[in-house]
Amino acid sequence: MDAITALGAKCLFVPIDVANVESVKQAIATTVVTFGRLDVAFNNAGIGGTYSGIHDMPEAVWDKLIAINLTGQFYCVKYQLQQFLKQGGGVIVNMSSLGGLKAEHGLVPYTVAKHGVLGLTKNIAVQYAAQNIRGNAICPYYVETPLLQAAPEATHKAWIEGTPTKRLCTPEEVAKAFIYLASSDSSYCNGTQLILDGGVMA
Ligand SMILES: NC(=O)c1ccc[n+]([C@@H]2O[C@H](COP(=O)([O-])OP(=O)(O)OC[C@H]3O[C@@H](n4cnc5c(N)ncnc54)[C@H](O)[C@@H]3O)[C@@H](O)[C@H]2O)c1
Image (cartoon, rainbow, N blue to C red; front, side, top):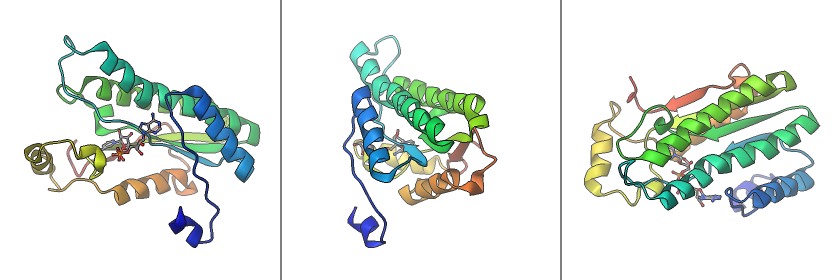
């Protein structure tokens, strides 16, 4: 927050639980009261998955991941759209993953949720383009963030080796993709996904 206010910009931090619809509604309302409107939303919150077979996936693990990574995105998008419709437009960027385009062995609810995020994003484009609202998604391969800290060193090394670029994505590269999709530079992008994978899908 200090870095943002030092640039002369107004900044607000609202703690939120995306799996709690009242929390989502309150955060959006507080933002609109503070700034008068909502121009751009980046629905980035998410948790990592654990590996297991579908046949022995504990229901509680499934429920928690879907609640945060998919239902949470729906809650955010729903109430952001209500504000966009009131004010005459807006832009949504949803965080998906390369796991939104392909299954990773054993990472079941995570890949299901991230595929769902792309479905939600496509529906934004189809239903609201005429109201000056755009929705797009970002699909990174592994990004060097705290989410990866639980992975064993050998796994981390294997991810890097499996990437033609021989390194993982940086948070800054995700931020640049977000800025592009949030800005008018991407004015004809709607309902699509920007893949950041160092060549993995190729
Ligand atoms: N790191 C990767 O390799 C990678 C790859 C592809 C996609 N992603 C996605 O990027 C997004 C950001 O992940 P990250 O890598 O920065 O991980 P991170 O753990 O560093 O950050 C995740 C953030 O989500 C927040 N969060 C978790 N549950 C929440 C909830 N219920 N309500 C509100 N906020 C909540 C956490 O507080 C944290 O700030 C996630 O959606 C993740 O699935 C990450």
